[in-house]
Length: 347
Image (tube, rainbow, N blue to C red):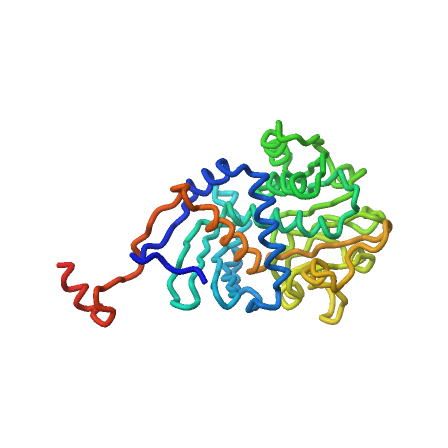
């Protein structure tokens, strides 16, 4: 149980405070910490309420709510996905999240989650690869060099020990941006002019494109034996990145099947296509990688428990930092039955 403030103020972590927190902790340390928090929560998977995210789709994009609870703490995230936003200088994804005490219903944390979602998505990708990728993996291909790119690269360095990132984007300016941002971060960087060149020598292939459409970023003949594919761009109905034949050759691992079958790469199959839940691999009740030649595929769409874990990590690290504001967002009358009187006295 996490008790609310006795004065009913709610800590709020702004974008500015989140950026300061990242610099205070260190981005790689924060990525490792969020990954560890997610793993701990996946190991108690069965204690959580689970539901596919609640989505409102439009021609322009999607707005979603992602709720969960472990019985003591409730959490949710509001998030949108609007690929066309970048054309007008807006973010494709924006988000905020909340934690609440189940016993009282009072919120105990409100936080920006645009930046935090990028951190938790990267941490989740690297955590999955820790359990599924070849043990000696050192080279990652990153196809799609937008807002997620640098977070993914640094998470794989921090959690999995990769030392080389090969970069490709249909927009060469995005690749140039990623090359600049990742300079001095301890990675060897290779800018590539095609997806085929990008995956040469890669042990791990990450696909992360933004267009809301059925797409074929990787064709079957591009993927050799023994690689791990981190497919994180397909995250809504009608959006995929991998050719169907790749999936037929792969061992597929997912977060929550009822959600992934609607939003992930496996929406290309019937609901009986075999997949393994990643939490079972972590718990040792299901096998992950079983051979050097095996192709493992993490069909990631993002799940509410991951956001819950990230929010709990942030709340635990806020103490004594001062990197939050106290929001007066809960009515707190002297007499809990006299809400009207409190309003009247404010005059």
